[in-house]
Length: 113
Image (cartoon, rainbow, N blue to C red; front, side):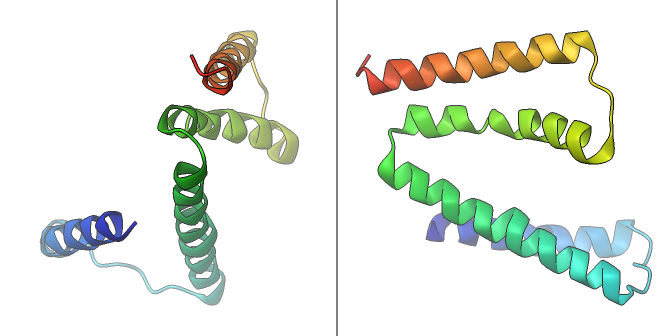
């Protein structure tokens, strides 16, 4: 966990001067935007990394790495449920194929294969 944190910090520090020169100045942020960034930082990064490393400590690496495939599935389901986005047939087919692959990996891992 510490190595990942240092890698992210070092990468950010190396990219900061490039972003400072290449990108336009940042706009002034209002309170809702600051709160949104704080939420993304805490829930989207800190909590996710904490759960990820806890999973690695408790589960075999193959099982944990296959769970990373749940991210796009979760995005599709939440987009449909919360935002009313449509889900096409091909998306449903892909969703079930990925879910089947994850279940197969989890099942094989639990059986010791």
